[in-house]
Image (cartoon, rainbow, N blue to C red; front, side, top):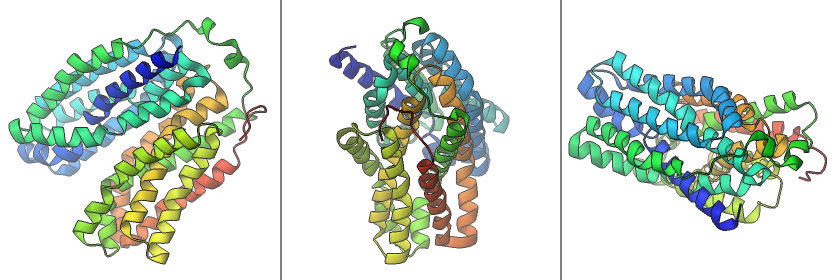
Length: 387
């Protein structure tokens, strides 16, 4: 595949991922309150339904990956747009908790078929071990999903209500998402995958390596989601004013994108294990400087955001580099499933911890990520893949 065609592939898939994330994962932050108000529910029910969708996404991940391994990702990603459109349409017509829960579960199926894990598996199927640059590019483009999605969802809700917002995103999947994913190339048959990739050595004790990576990404996704849900509140518990806390939290997004660009420019010639080790150290480093030395809240937000941005890339590039593209989709689903489960539980568990411990809750996330750094020191790469 030529450089220009890879650029087109990356831009197309990145745009489709932006739509997928903006219309699913980032939806409750804007619509949970108006949904709960109209349906006469507590917002806890809305977030509970969302958590159930994330748990379903985790459970379906290995099956979706195996599907992509067998036939490529274009059809799966196009189907995800249809399923998400159905779920969002059902959401727009929900009349109570039962119909809303069902709508979120359908959307969760679409998320399992259409978010990063499926996109990374698609790139691995198309490009083999050469997919690293495209994986980074897709995360760069889709890193703006919240930047685009939150204001647009808020505007739609303000103009027509939350039902119009959900219905509008459903239409976007049909009119924009499906055509975008249709442009993806068809995958070659499994027999045509680069023979060098198929013969490439795997790490010793691959099951143990998979378990180690599963912990690393579960810790990373727990911390990422906990911070996304509670960072302004956590900073206020540390003594920051509301305006300072909100301004500092707003730096997480730009830091993520900047770190992904830095990974592409500075670390692309290193083994992904190097980037993963760097990524896991930034959050505990920021927590230590923030709590022990008095570093400004903005500094902690920047370090956390940078580490989180690099972790997103590592979740796709590190398993691909260690295990190769053969069976990558299913293996990726197995490795990431615990991460999706921890992601679903993080907002509730970390919120309860803040209520009990205040700003001291930050030490839990710091220890989780420090543990991930230590675990990565035990990961060994196959011979011929220098770190």
